[in-house]
Image 1 (cartoon, rainbow, N blue to C red):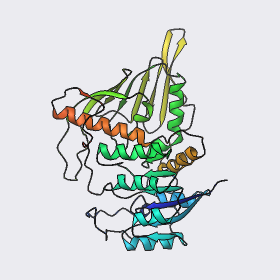
Image 2 (cartoon, rainbow, N blue to C red):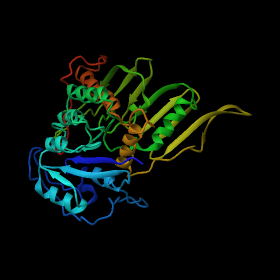
Image 3 (spheres, rainbow, N blue to C red):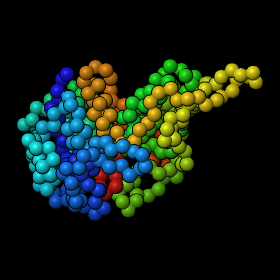
Image 4 (tube, helix red, strand yellow):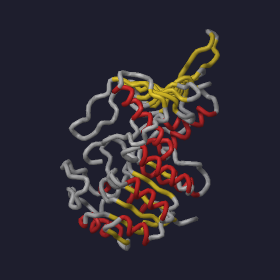
Length: 363
C-alpha cells in the first residue's frame, strides 16, 4: 500500500477546528492573524453531528487525513499561532509554518488541502502545483473570479494534478452510482435536469452535465447581502451545446434528472422511477434504489478518497472536480448577467474573465 505525505494550509473551520469545537459566530476580517477561536477539545474523537441517528465521522481535512491509514499528515500552515499550537497538540510530531509558501517549498507533499479563505487561494493552488504536489483539495468556494479559476484549473490540468473543490455531498459514492444509472440508459435519454439553485459553492447538478453550457437566461437576482455575498438568488435556465436544459427553480428539490424512460430524484435520499410494461400499458413506477444511499457527514472523507483514486488510476477526476466547479461558477455568473439585463440570453463561455462572485464575510 502506498503512503501519501499530506499537509493542510489554513487551520480554520474546515482545516482543523470543526472536529474540536463549535463554529464561533464572531465576525473578523479575512486578513486578521488573530481570529476568533472557540473553546476546543484536542482529545475529541470525531466531529459530532447533531441529527438523530447520525454517526460521528471526521469532518476537517486535517482529521480526515490523519485517520486514513495510507496518508501521513506531516505539516500544517496557519498565521494564527493559537491554531498552530492546537494542531501540534492534536497531531504530535508535525511540522508547522506561519507561511503557506514555506510549507509548500520545504515539504515534499503528495496531497495538500488548501482550507484558507478564498482570497489568495488561486495563487496557493498554482504554487502547490509548481512545488510538485500531486493532488489538491480546496475548500469552497473555489475562487472569486473566472480568471482565477482558469489559472487554477489550467495549472492542475497541465500537470495532471487532480483537484477536488470542496467538502460537499457530491463527493459521496452514491453520486457515482446515480450517474452510472444515467450513463447505462436506465432512465432513457436525459430530457432535463432541475435543481433549486446553481450554487457554484455547493452544486449538485454539474456532475451530471458532460456537455459544455451554451447559454443561460436568468431573472429575479437580488442585491448584495449584508453578509457580503452576491451569489445568484434568482431563477433561470442553462442549456448545453447538445440542447439539454438545466432548470434552476426556487422550491425545487436538490436534484431531479428526467429521462424519456424514467427519473432520478435526490431529496435527502435517492429515488428511482422507471417505465415498465403493465397490463394497463406503460406505467412509470418507483422501484428500489439499486445502489448506495447518500450518508451525511462524509464530505471530506470521500473528497480525499476521490483524490487517492485519481492518483492510483481508478478515477479520471474527482466527482467535484475543478473543471466541474468552474462550469457551475460560469453558469451562475451568466445567470446574474442575464438577470441584470432583464432576462436576456447570455451566451457562454463569457468573454470577460474578470467577472466573479463575492461571498459571505467568513469565506
